[in-house]
Image (tube, rainbow, N blue to C red):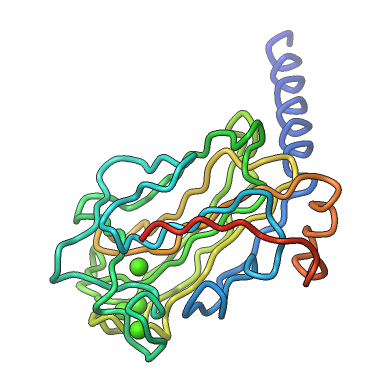
Length: 236
Ligand SMILES: [Ca+2]
Ligand SMILES: [Ca+2]
Ligand SMILES: [Ca+2]
Ligand SMILES: [Ca+2]
């Protein structure tokens, strides 16, 4: 009896913590993406700090973000970048660069540290390709899940699975999809997962801070249009 009571108390306090952490969280379901200004729902917002990693310099090296181990930027033969990174939005990303699961990873977790004292309030990532799918011998189409975490690494929930991919593995870009999260309480990490593949790519990791009171408006992802200036750092 005592044990069951304490279990109930534990469950309800966990539920309260989850509700508090996710009260302001808003996921952005996958949307087509060909370039930052053309496609990112964050492009029109006014951030205090903002970073975009496009992998064109061959490294994941924007500050305040640490990827989980095992991923890398391929040399030349396995590339599926966001369309704009080769200098032209033309339906191919085959001569840009991307971040690859290396045949070993079915998820990528990016952990954020504080930027001038605040965790990011906005974070996004672009899924760009999948090759081999485990099991049925399928290729180039598979399920993708996205999860974000608030302060203390409390999950803000999972969206998906979304069945992504165009059936091709040659840098085509019509299949590319942005996933995002807005959480005014802060984002400690994001995770993208393909449960049935270790042969897939992402690009355009993007994150930044909009402090209150601007953040309250930004939650709707609209408004804020021409307002103040935006500082953006791009690693190239
Ligand atoms: Ca292109
Ligand atoms: Ca790229
Ligand atoms: Ca692609
Ligand atoms: Ca593809």
